[in-house]
Image 1 (cartoon, helix red, strand yellow):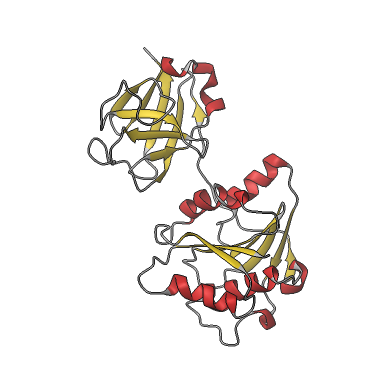
Image 2: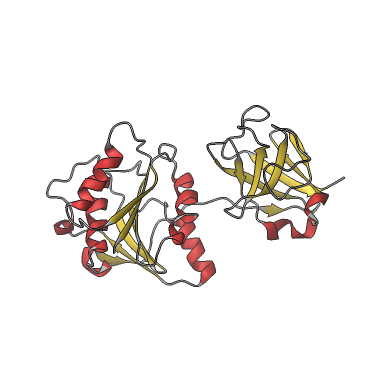
Length: 269
């Protein structure tokens, strides 16, 4: 059984998301397709990195992941396919695979890239504005149907990467990061991992600063009985990163963070 995932910034009103299914089923009618997200913020390559890297590798080995967040569609940016570890990816060469490549480096996974330069694996007519339908989805379908990666394109070794989120430790031992992603509850996922503030432990001995507010300590889960609704809390998200939430509420009543906003964690003063 072949698995394919789809991640785009198309939204779901126009049908652009659904037609990708059709392009795939014409070639691989038995494929199992999962829509990871069609609500990546328009042209937001960094957000696509976060969503894909935190989702793709939970699928079975051999899954093909299609990513169409492609502000350069129709330009000279390359269409590419890749094997990262035991997973395959089809995407524009615009940095959208940076987080997955960073993960491969940390995990010791091997990688392989090809430039998609073989039109026999595309649809017959390729438009300049919809490579997701006309090029990426057909290639993904062929890969899912068993065509080797080396058959759909020519080998390449220099995929484009972009700067992503990080955390830095200051001389006073505080750790600074940024908001990576805002989920549908308004929770702010931030670029700080547990090991990066381990020197400030225990967690109840830290302050988290975001959008002009200070959070005293960290909790283990949502709905902590000591905190009222809409109280700001900090905890570890399922992605592994620091998360700031309005307890049992929907974000925006207390703070309205946006991606890129700075966050600081320091020892209680």
